[in-house]
Image (cartoon, rainbow over all chains, first blue to last red; front, top):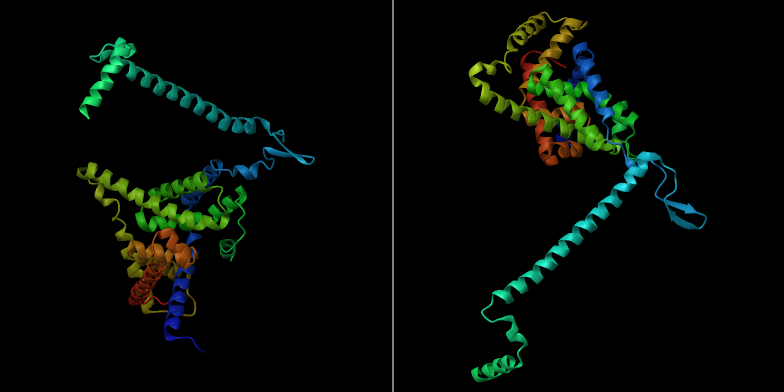
Length: 145
Length: 202
């Protein structure tokens, strides 16, 4: 026997613990109806609201084998399933629309900023079309250097 | 034991409705008791267990059956803590209305039982441990369990009553395996000391 004193003590403790829990188990049988009945009701209620494993419930996947090729759809899985598969598609469409409008807005606001800067500048916009003005700018920068 | 067999199942199959039902059935009474030792009020304990069952079913109803015990115990502990937090606010609001009696007014009944159990131990008839004696012993044990510090009681009950292993208990309690062992050791030590002092031998 190579059981150490520590493990013997551990075993003794465990044995004692088991004796206690056996008594506790015995006590469970004496729980009154006022306790067991609500417990049963609570269990039923919980089961009714159970989260169902989606993959397990529908064995048919969206991808169906047709001979040697794969195809989308198939399975004929009822209304609930059709609605469920419509959710990601709807989410995608909504996402694209939102992104599109956001992009539009930022594009527009950029153009508006440039326009506003041009119009509110001291220099009239017409000056940019004047070849003499470009020449003036060039000579001025050359002078500075 | 049926309970043990289910606990040690390794197949990663998801729990069916029947399995979830069986699991809840197997733990509901112990869960009620565990919660009751904590809150010492039947109605609240029932509420807590109901809440825990609902949370398990709603959020983890699709988990493999062997994960259910740990998840359920963790949920039960959290729901019990939530109850205490609610009580605290409730008491803060209604403290003037004498709400403080609720938790501690069951002492009288137990004192009588204790006295009875001590009396019967004096003329101990060891051969036939009659029903009354058994009941007294049971109540004494329950009383001592209620007296344990919360973490010790949790560890003790999960480890030995729910028959979870050290790792599962640690996961459910959110602590290390070492502290689970320490809690269990101290709990058993305290229980045996207290029960022996009352002349109760198991």
